[in-house]
Length: 217
Image (cartoon, rainbow, N blue to C red; front, side, top):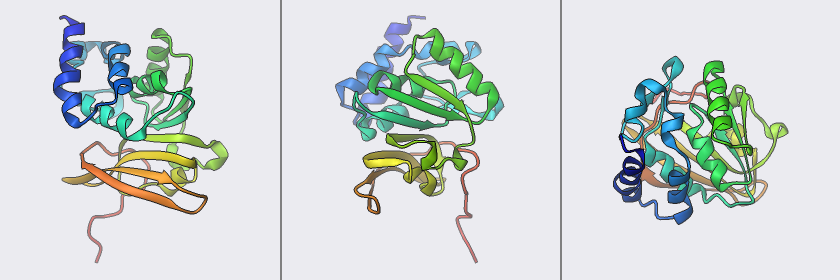
């Protein structure tokens, strides 16, 4: 398989049509070798428009979702970034090419270990993987310029909003299947947040965050 050709087609046919036009974001997908973050059994499918299975029932997200998240988060080279849900480490690596420092939180030990190995093998020294339940995080665990949720939630977690610096951005997929929205929250001040929902998307649920029933009597 010609991985470089497949990578080019992934960017042009999957990522770019989702309005991912930022050169830095597209270059991140060139720089980070996605095939190195895919379980060996699925390496030939590294660039397919599918969710690639990982350990413990988790999965790698489709590339266009990762691209759109990065585009909406507007990552700067001086930013410190928090990712929720490390998975294989691929999105953390993309963030690592754009930001100064990345902390990625993963609660599944097997995935955290694999992601650390993948990131180390690919030379990412500015990405730290922490084995932790992200639903328990507070501002005491740090504050960030951007927070990216690599999965969906029923509502934007308030504990994560408290970890945004003034001017910071949080990107997540919010809602219930089949209707979910890509959501961007910007922290305007200590008490004020601006929320926009610029696009439709569906993503697997992140564990441990509240998942209120869609209908209540």
